[in-house]
Image 1 (cartoon, rainbow, N blue to C red):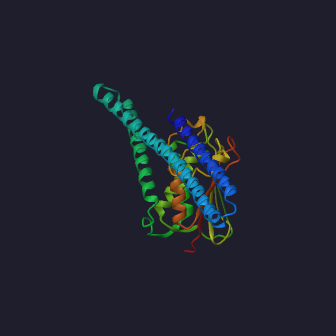
Image 2: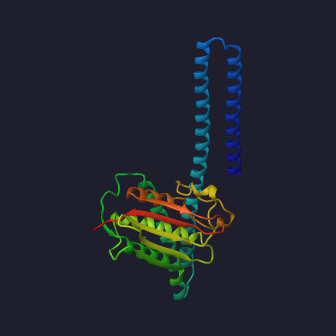
Image 3: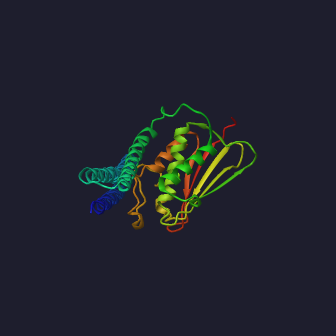
Length: 302
């Protein structure tokens, strides 16, 4: 209901802006026709007209951006609230059950496992929000050292398998190199782990029931290290492709209603890649055709 209302507001402001521009054009054209002999008045009138049009356009763009930003902010708040409230409610329910009833040891251990899993989910959500806050700070993450990016990728794949309880065949790993040298990157190891695990998590979450993720690490030349992660999931429409790396943005899709998240994962990846002098981009043939996310980083000779 709120989204529909905001879309109506966006349409209203767009129509208002277009109407004002059309009115200004009509008034100015009429003024020019009536005063075409007055050269000085015509000159200043054209300048004044251009300023009015520019102001109207800037005002309309600003209003539309603010409405979209508020909409994304509310979506983020709702997502984070859900991500925090659900595990807390689950932990409380299991603790109350343990407090009120005598349970067999096997069931108690099962409850402990569920509560630990919910605690991990809470921790991940909090860390995601904190990382997003630090992503825009250029002063953080300046301490850099030589990092074996191959090891980073493998550790993140193992962590993703464990976190999502996946079989080994869920990931297909491939590595190519122009020579036998290592895959080194000069950067912050923690940040690089965060970027890779976020890319893998996205590939898993948007793969649907059949998780088949292809991970390819290559060094096409002496200057670049390229990691490509491709899933066979829901894909991304061309309209959403340019917006998926923005803060709070989540792809609107009916089949993704069950997918939980904060809309910060790819934003953090982009910020980390930029800090390391690299870039990240995504490709998709459209909805239902999977998504490929590629991160390029400068290669270190160390």
